[in-house]
Structures are given as structure tokens and as C-alpha cells.
Image (cartoon, rainbow, N blue to C red; front, side, top):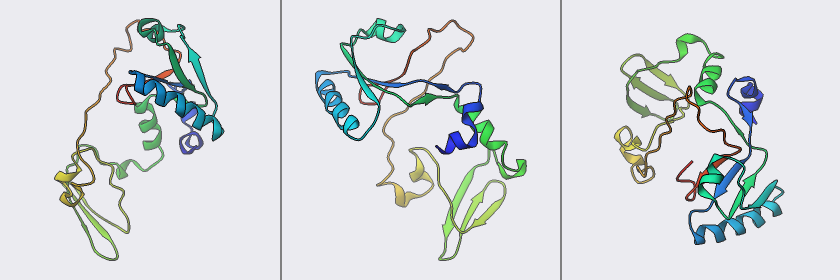
Amino acid sequence: EGLRAAGVEQTRGYALRPSCLVPASDGEREDLLASHELLKADGFDTRLLESPRDDALTKALAPDIVLEQHGDAVCNPREVCSMLASRVPADSIFESTQLEGIDADPSSVTVTTSGPVFRARHVLLATNAYTHALLPQLAPLVQPNRAQMLAIDARSSAPELARAYYMDRGSEY
């Protein structure tokens, strides 16, 4: 709801599109059936589709069942970041700035970078799985697990997908 309130629906890449879970194994298929019942019981608009063949992915993989979740949407992350960045003063965003340290005392936090030094009451740390290099005390809590990346040539004639897909328990999307 927060991104919708901020105007994400106005970005060019935003589109209402259901998400869809595709099981990669018999065990995952059974879990998917159980998930469907739990989601329905909680009031979510989910549907089990048997042998859908309505876009490039379902035609190619030919799954016997998928779990479709309505009310979801897709967006272009770059457009969303640009939209959010446009709402704050230009001099408050520091790109290509190395974070060098975070020190806290009871009343504030000091953030040291390769550029300015910041002092605040609170800091939200949004990093990747290699957080331990910055804050070793978080090493037991945040560990590298896998890397993901999606690269497409938007100018190509890529097939249109009817849904946003997740497979192999969310490891592939």
C-alpha cells in the first residue's frame, strides 16, 4: 500500500498482474496445495489452475498445476527508485559513496562514509548478504545464500507473460 500511496501505479512499467507459484517437485506440489487452502482461509484471492497453457512459460514448462494469487502487480524497479528519489532533495542522496562505519551511542548513530559523515537518532541499514563486512556482529544473522539477477534486452521480442512467476520455492523468479 505504501508504494501505491506514493504513486507507483503512475510509473510506465507498473501493471496489475497476478503472481503464480509453479511447483518444481512433487513435494513442492503438495505444499502448494496446502498453501492454497491456508491462503483461502485467510481471505486471499488464490486459485489453483490445472494445466494452464496461456503464455510462453506455461506452454514451455507444461505444469500440471499452479497457484495463482490475484491482487499482485509488477513494476520496473528502476522507475520506482527514480520516482522515490524525485521526492527528496537532490543533495540528500549519495550514490557511489562507500560506507565505512556505523557507531552508535545511547542517543544517536554516526555513519561514516567516503564522503560526508552523518549523525541521526536512527539508521535503517539496507545492505546485501555481505553485511558482516560492515557490521561483524550481524554475521550470525545475515549470511550469503545465493545470488540472483535478471537481465533482459527490453528491445527484443521477448514473450509476454500472463503472470509474475515464482518457481522452486521462490528461488527462481
